[in-house]
Length: 378
Ligand SMILES: NC(=O)C1=CN([C@@H]2O[C@H](COP(=O)(O)OP(=O)(O)OC[C@H]3O[C@@H](n4cnc5c(N)ncnc54)[C@H](O)[C@@H]3O)[C@@H](O)[C@H]2O)C=CC1
Ligand SMILES: O=P(O)(O)OC[C@H]1O[C@](O)(CO)[C@@H](O)[C@@H]1O
Image (cartoon, rainbow, N blue to C red; front, side, top):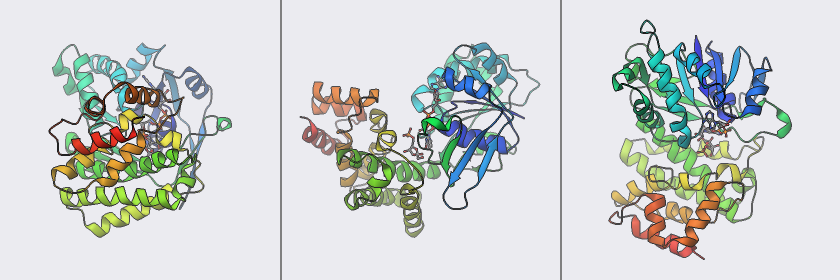
């Protein structure tokens, strides 16, 4: 069995690559980072060290690595004969990998089983976004039948790694990979560590609006308070209280929308508060808050749940307050944070809200977000 995985970064090596390796796949990593790909290509194995309850140490081998920028044709040929293609490149990058997947589907022998395509990104229905781009790049849309596109929800905290760690990755011991089963029919790909679910929506929304909303809330409040590490952010009572406040709001939405048992959701929140504060995981507010413009997007971790709460007449004060605090995120190395600061000073609050959050002026959440943006404009 062979899997081609785009993005040999933290999640690529420390989660998706590891799980596919454990499932028995030969993994072909494809990445545009030449240094990373050269290191992988010249190294027979790397180590994934888990920290936390039930931690194990895993050695990943039986992989190859290709530079998808300089060796595009090789990557396409690998995908054309693979069983699975996965991505962990970031939602905004999917459109760049899509043409390679499209060319591979077009080249694929009709004798082969359809290619399983799964985007493993922190975004609602990321595989659907990828599919749109793949279909756009196909010479004939009917060729899309040569692939099965399935959405997934991936959950494992993989922080930035020490510079001297090389290819080795330290990850939390917890992980969850939920994949929608319906597109596959009766025969799902062989991935024992993943679980296949008929309806992914509750899983992805519970994950994104709890894990990612909570984590990013701590990052933005932490940054504004001058804290640099995530563990320090979580041990600051005022910041932990802000996280609990946003998670109480997203809980109200998840319970109302997906009929989650409130006690089960509270237990999920409590479990995640412990994960977030794991002192063995060295993580920074800069990493967790990265790409703030994406995170303030319409279907993302703050505006997404706050908009639905407002539509239901439910409160979202803590989410809106956090959107305001996120506007203080100013990290010179993060291009989106630089753009955010520029937009804040160049736009009116209405222009900013319309372009960044995608909220319509008639939306019930719109006035509160405009107000918080205005309050944070210098
Ligand atoms: N790190 C984490 O804890 C988690 C991350 N995720 C998601 O996984 C995705 C990746 O995140 P990380 O691994 O943390 O980021 P990362 O920055 O460590 O890895 C991304 C990799 O993608 C590569 N890349 C960029 N453009 C590319 C292209 N055109 N073709 C091929 N490779 C390309 C980069 O060179 C890099 O190696 C994101 O969508 C993130 O939201 C999801 C769950 C947890
Ligand atoms: O690209 P994003 O959305 O910041 O993804 C990384 C996030 O995902 C998480 O692993 C949670 O799934 C957090 O570590 C981090 O906040």
